[in-house]
Amino acid sequence: MLKLHFLRGYTFSVRQVHTQVAIVGGGTAGLNVAAQLIADGHAIPQQIRIFEPMKMHTYQPGWTMVGGGLYDINKTLQPMEKVLPKNVIVSDSPVTRINPEENQIQTFDGEKYTYDQLVVATGIRTDFDQIKGARKYLEDPNSPVASIYHFKYASKMNRLVDEFEGGKLVFSEPQMPIKCGGAPQKIVYLSHDRLRKRGIKSDIHFYKTSALIFGVPKYAEILTEVCKTKQINCHFKQKLVEVQDHIAIFEDQDTKELQSVPFDLLHLVPPQVPGKYIAASGLGDAAGYCNVHPGTLQHIKYKNIWSLGDCSSLPTSKTAAAVMAQTPVLVKNLIRTWKKGLEPLPEYQGYTSCPIFTSQSTLLLAEFKYNSELDETFPIFQSNESRLMFYLKKDFFPFAYWYFMVKGLWGGRDGFRFFKGA
Image (tube, rainbow, N blue to C red; front, top):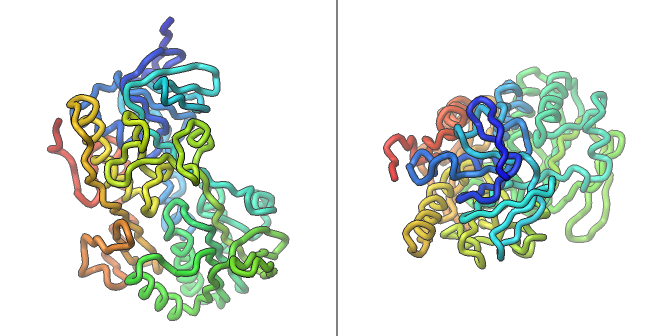
């Protein structure tokens, strides 16, 4: 029996047997796919079901700016009903398992749904509990420990830097992949600049699990010079494993030896993992990410399953810019195989972008594709820190996200999609 109820133009399902296009995840990737399918005339809203348990949609790239004193936390949050395409069907019980052999999805409330085409777009989950003691000190408002990887802890970071009166700041970065691999060092530079402007003397240390400041040689050279100029001490192959009272414990990735590092302020970045249901459903690669072809975004085994964004196995940096580049390829290939009976085209070349704040007024725009190959849009502005790129990131990108991306009208560096038809 079909039972539906309506809320402000949205159709929320209590029970429905079948949907043509099922999208697991209502974050940036899932919303973008749904919006482009509708905007391009490939589907009507009632043919799409989005599985999303969260009631609020978050603009997570904004949390770096919140922690860096550039942005209002309230501007990073919108109720889901305001960003969902009108009249799509929504199931708000979490997906617990997918049976790809039967084209079936099971949710936490015990309901089962079938689909013609499935898009897996659930992102990755921050796992603060992998760092012993982290959650305790993050939750303590009096503890000088914060993180831009959670909206509440990002606001705390902003406050801690505002109140900082001098001493040692420690910043960590976990093993990759994570959401926006450049964010852990963005907050280093933003914090440094805020303290410099206030005339506060500080001793800043940046501990990275990896062996490089950045994975693309051109940008690594620029950022190495940035750290040198700002007198930021970089420590490589050092993994944060525990937080104690004003003590951070790091594990050397070569020797496995532990060292205790005192701090007056700690910014930590948690390890991040894909949803367990992906591996449990037989859709994951060895690391648990949805295993798709790097050029077509089609699942390696199941031809009516697709994935993009942070939860996918695509070997590129996990950013919103990458999602903007991936979405048109996924939508085009989904329609080619589903409605036209054609083979998908390997058109995605791994494009991603990492806008790295280097101060409260400058930014280094890093753009690259697979194999760390440069793929720059504004080469004249990308050989050093740029004030123009700073304002593009700070002001224009959030505007484009909220007013155009959620409507399927923003194509990232390809610009507006007003004339993209079926």
